[in-house]
Length: 70
Image 1 (cartoon, helix red, strand yellow):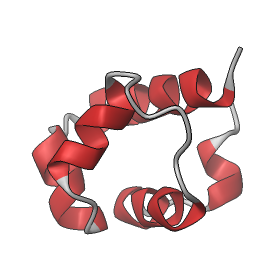
Image 2 (tube, one colour; image 1 turned 60 degrees about the horizontal axis):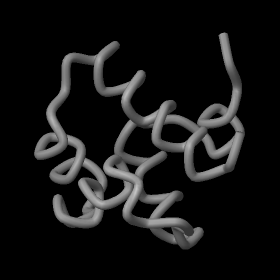
Image 3 (cartoon, one colour; image 1 turned 90 degrees about the vertical axis):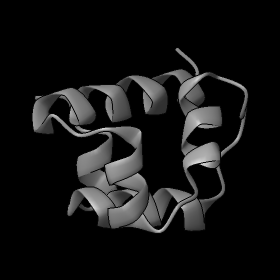
Image 4 (spheres, rainbow, N blue to C red; image 1 turned 180 degrees about the vertical axis):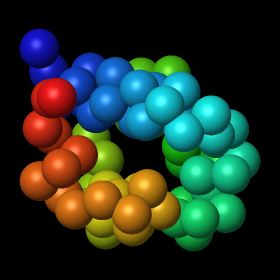
């Protein structure tokens, strides 16, 4: 599995668990809704580290928690 696919799956899972929309994640993370949509649609093959850290902050999780499967 590619890292981009794993990231997309994890973000989708977290959104469903928290019953959040992409817009709410955008507000909490400071990442533009269009950027989040591009990541979730697989249009973005590589996400820069700053964007990934902001997404983690939006979810209030660490970077390591982003890639841990429960």
